[in-house]
Every structure is written in structure tokens, then in C-alpha cells.
Image (cartoon, helix red, strand yellow):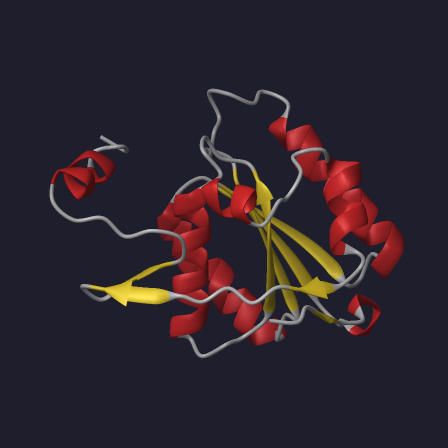
Length: 165
């Protein structure tokens, strides 16, 4: 499958969603890294184009997604772990909105970001995404829930289901 390129300078609205509780125990400097990404994008795209929204719980995503849909965001950057990425994408897609989506690895495992070869270093991350390479990622559904990377059954699903307990 050929990688297509998009002109990110044509975007009218970019929204960064940062889950402050993703990977918190591992990366004390994560907020500074996300802030550096925010500054980089504002410098390249303009201050009116780029917005930053921090959440602490998945329940807050409903309000953020309302804002994304109302603003017709062209590009949504999800800074969080795999659970945040899955939850945000599912809510955005359930609302019928189809923005370009990027991920910044801010979680514990960051499987999605690893599969997309995304750096945790803000400068390297920005340099990569500002090239505008578009890599298709397909979402699946199981039991009414979206998934992007893997779905588990049996013992595996029981273990993953208790991660947040």
C-alpha cells in the first residue's frame, strides 16, 4: 500500500488530547514533552489553529469529542496510552467525524505508537509528522468495542481487563 502525503498547512483546526494519567508512573516529564509538541505545532501552523486539551479520565472524552466535531478538526493528536487512543478514536468515529489522527506515545506500553514507529522525543516526533505521511490504520470491532492493534479472548482478555483495577 502506497503512503500518501497530505499538506498539513491546509488544516484549519488541530486538537491535541493529552491524558495526564497515561503512563504517569513512568514518565514524570511527559507534560513537558507534550507541551514541546504543542509549541512546535503552534510555531509551524499558527496559534489559532492548534488547541490543547488535557483530560484525566475517559469520561471527559465525550466533551472533548463534542468540541472536535463542532470545530470540524482536521487533525487530532492523541497523547496517551493505547487505551486512550482506542477510546478517543472510537468516540470520534461513533460521532461520524473522520479527522486525520496521530499518536504521541504517552502511555505505559505504547503499542500503537511503536507499530507506527513514533518517537517519544518531541523534536523527532514533530519532524516526522510535519512531513504529512499518511499511513492507513484499520479499526476492528468485537462485542461492540473498537480495537486498533489486538483483541484478546480467554485468559488474555481477563488479564487486560484488570489492568485498571
